[in-house]
Length: 432
Image 1: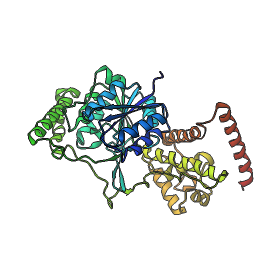
Image 2: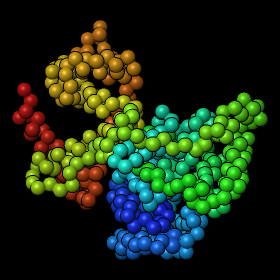
Image 3: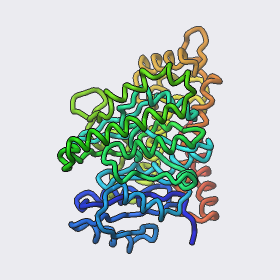
């Protein structure tokens, strides 16, 4: 039996109303080397039948029907069954972006990361907002990650497992599992236990997960106040012990004030509230396209290709902290050199010439562009733009891979040759 790259684990309990959305988002990944473990935790609705139907449709889906034992025990059973090199977790109420697994695996393998953590979308009704706590993408050490976490321990970004990718070898070597006795912060304990055994973490600035909070408070779940207090004190003690193991005694004493803010802060969940900055209607947070096309011609094909480029550029913008029009300007400068035809460059970017001049000035101040004597028409890429250009080249390559994913090697070669020939012909006809 082939070993999948990722084992994606989804506990399922009475989720028939939302389970299809969750599973469809996994099966719709543009990264296909995974197994999906649907763990039916004694559901009493139509969830078991839905799970079985997906298993019949796709051989990557494995279904387990079991007596109800809670989410932690269910996840542990799935970890025991998992065959993938990496572990990725979802809740049945939520869903992931089409590129989530691809970006996770790429970040882990190209950077030698022991864990990958990403931004996510918080969903409230028909609105969403992007959530994340570390502002720069890249590889950081375990202690640097712990420093970030100590400054904002109340953030779901650190406490949950569903915006992270884990190496199964580490989980198995140290037998890291969920604590079935906990019903508060069980994810956080798992994360901290895992972090004790890693060297580094890759911070992925791209939101990969849509989180919909549905559960009630611990009291609403039927727990006694005395047991809740005892459980929370145990979690707080573990949190403190975690930092004692991460830091030497002097560092711990210096940071103890930050660390103990956990006592006051943990855990809050920033909602996506309509009208507040950063909140938008669900569906407007990323590039999409209509699913059904009435026409079948070259224009339609080019439309979907252009939308694919737009999406990859959007992802690159999220990773680099730049705007999409900044990146489109970089591509223009890479292709045509200095924007001497200022009106044409502005038209391509969909902005006025005044806005284009302001964009160039801003990018020059950041060191990405070189400009002679303040004249925006002389703008050219600076050395500092190198990493961004590498990311853009990768985005172009990703679209090429997407276009040819279902082709044989021979078909791929013929397609690329024909596309370049068509481009050369059009260039001769449209160039002034």
